[in-house]
Image (cartoon, rainbow, N blue to C red; front, side):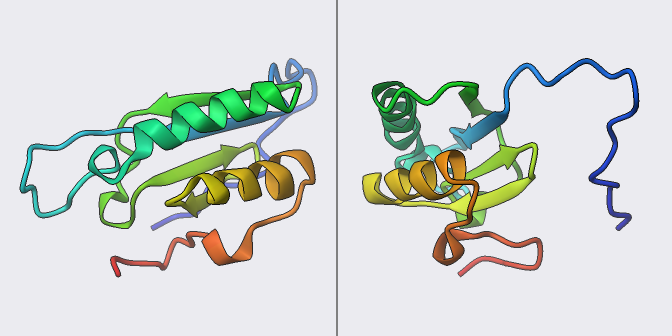
Length: 122
């Protein structure tokens, strides 16, 4: 698999519309599907909380979106944050708060929740 150059911006490109863009998978697969899905693991509730909490905290320049399948179903619920391309697996409202505080606001990482390319199903 070829990796993508993370520094793909070019002189003359428009400025980013958002400084941070969060995609939370809410994909739903049929009941009993062997890969499972993020929706059955509570991703809709977690994404809705994240969106409301970011607004409550007054975080500017950030967009929190739902996404379709991010193709890591077995590990869900998952999210990916751009422009960094950092993936997280998260389960609780406390996980969401930690991601908002440490990553979105602070620019750090929540190491215990990081999902790396080599991570597979538990």
